[in-house]
Length: 125
Length: 343
Image (cartoon, rainbow over all chains, first blue to last red; front, side, top):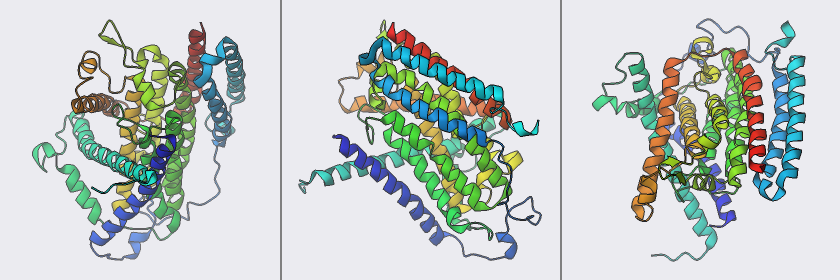
């Protein structure tokens, strides 16, 4: 099988994966018992009391720092893959370079750690 | 017989067979798993578990399915209807996609793409998006909290997960899951298998912990901690949409376990037996799938055991463990592997 053919399969996975749940939910809609509407049924669940305002309010997402760190580290990780694939032909020199690269990364992690970016709710202390 | 000349049509037919085979394999495993999980957990709790529908309660998944199919579908009035309805479908799609590149036997793989492992890592992280959609679309405070936690958790464990695979990629020199399993076929003295768990024990620990966190299972089941967030992101879902989330979750379970087996436990290779069936035609494939599924269920059982034993960890502990424990270990593993391979 050629490479292109494999990606056709991936595309088919996306298509079938998108259609399958739509179809299942549609069929379930045909099978289920008729709706018995009642106002209370369509309320948002909040421990059986009347919901107190919407959930879409401004609130403090304390851990946005993790997202920032994730962006940094995930990109670095992807950079390591080409090295891992070809390290045989690159030899010792590339390995030393990768170790320096990881050392810089580890320094960044140590800095973030020291600064308290890895603490949950660091703003509250 | 109709002779098909067009190579495009042929590859589409092959692809469709692959998709159907994967969905069938996953569905059967998911059906069985819903029963197995309840039974195992019940036994750990010294209960009987499902034992009414059929022998040993084996027909329980069928009964559950019929119930879920006929349940009334309630959409909360205040929900964001579009996002709310799209989320279960997205959850299923993103759970199914990584399964394309996981093989259960030599050649028994839907799409043996060259970037296999990287593809799996990339698309499996998409499922966070589905959970966030559900959490936001429901307009429920518990769901939103659960969704936010999920985002933080998946992001944190994505990095150790991807980093811990680098050592294996460096040893094999390929990202294809088929090549990775083929590289583990040899043995020492004919009995001790050359699996990557022995070459990369540190990576195995990191990968295993990270994959459990990505699956969202105890001890990392914060996305849907039922006792504090009343099931988190799928609180507001009922009927078939709820079933889609459950389906997606168990697909993650199966695919995650299959990935552990593929990367670290030699896939469909077993010493003594594997060389024996090498030239037996179709029996070879049968034995390979049998070995693979057996190994997969060892991992699955271990995870159920963990669920029956451990408690849920606190959010801050989960994130600290990821960033301060697994990430440095994964980085160290890359350095150690690089140094040893270069010498």
